[in-house]
Image (cartoon, rainbow, N blue to C red; front, top):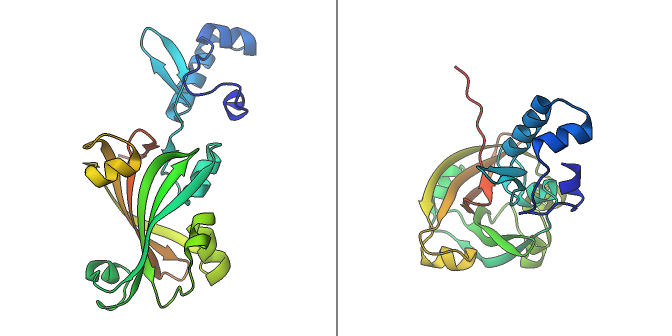
Length: 221
């Protein structure tokens, strides 16, 4: 893991065999095998039948509510955003309702292409009250995390999110933005994000490349 984090091993590089790892670290073969299974579970390596173990292409995990910037930083990747659209709308009644606002409320709509190391990872469309969050500029939004911006400039502390997740295929416009073929699999995640006061302050529709994101769920019987 440290070698991957330091950049000594990069995506596609072969990882030492279980037997060699066991000898290098003076552990049993079974311990080395379990360690590789753990790294695979974390999405750091992938095991190819008959070929060996290789460093995996970085994936973003959705197991904790974090901004895209925080998620990529946690995987050792540089992140950036390109604002595709920024406008005021007053005809999104369903979204206004999700934000506990009157149907005709003016909403700030922010559509951003999210990039990891200059590669398109996702398209996120965020909605928030135009009245409550006046002054949000394109430059400020492109500079970094929207979560951090809301916390520092507007005193909003993010608490939790309710999410709806399904899978779909990229249409022509989305495929072009994400640099993938039309119909490419994407995770569609709808988030209503709440502050520590229990108020819904942000609604996000995210379209995430399935080959760059992973959702892990623990189930109990």
